[in-house]
Amino acid sequence: MELSVLKVAGTEDTPEILFDTQTNEYIISGRSLPEDVSSFYKPVFDWLNEFEKNITSNPSFKFKLEYFNTASSKIILDILMRLEEINNASSSTVNIEWYYMESDDDMLEAGEEYKELVEIPFNVIAF
Image (cartoon, rainbow, N blue to C red; front, side, top):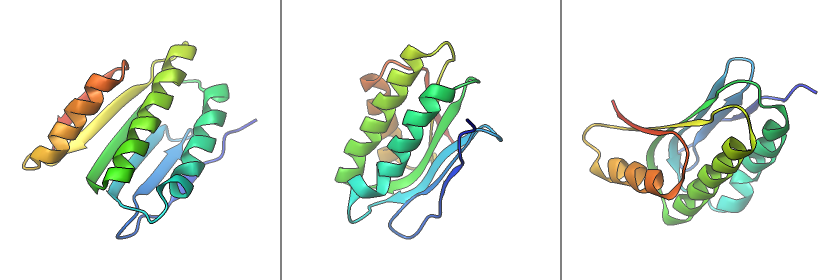
């Protein structure tokens, strides 16, 4: 079964999400402060459950967030922990790329903290 593309358009309060196995792009970008963080991110977890059964390459999941609220910070950790589980259960290597604007110390710090919390290849990258 071919895994469908997960594409969510970003808004002022919600990030753009693009998970596409055809182009090997896995990106969450923008601002994350949805009203109901659990329901907003549910499709991500549903997609990751299918992805785990169909993983074929060494995917790099890119986080390019400008801002996220406290509720989102917990769900981002949940996503990273889910990716760690997929990485551990797979013969493929799942990589995390955490992007932050060079001047944004908060996003740098967040990336460094997440990197400490999960055991998965994790790069913190300034742009």
